[in-house]
Length: 156
Picture 1 (cartoon, rainbow, N blue to C red):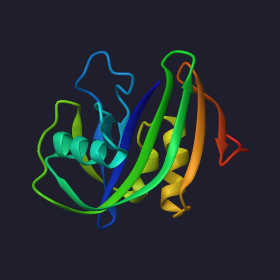
Picture 2: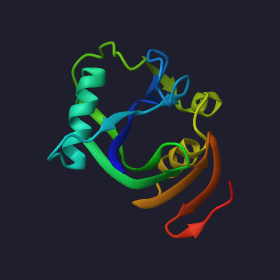
Picture 3: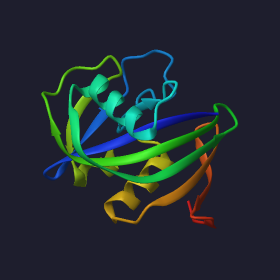
Picture 4: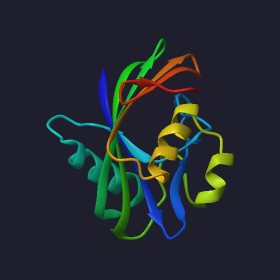
């Protein structure tokens, strides 16, 4: 079990997305995701968020919102608790990352990008401005087999 953060940073009508193409053994290889990463010892979700965003993008978040907890259950990767954030204010200059390629993607183009099916669910919840939520996503290999939102099964 491990804890991670993920953040969708918005600028105007676009979100900063990371195309994970640089690492050979990356479970997200080829996918477009937000930015974030694993907690370090002693970090809170906010500590991890701010550090990971700064390390991966060069940006310092000045306004962000904790949106929910996503529990990933997988027959291959184990269990992960992801703390999901959005941000719309920041300082700094975007830098390159060793994780992949960063791009500002217009909101209306995001659904067409290669992503995990579960990511599409929580990104939709963010766009619909759903209040703080708990989402459980169960995978068998790369296939999403179950989704539970706030304790209620949802269609996938």
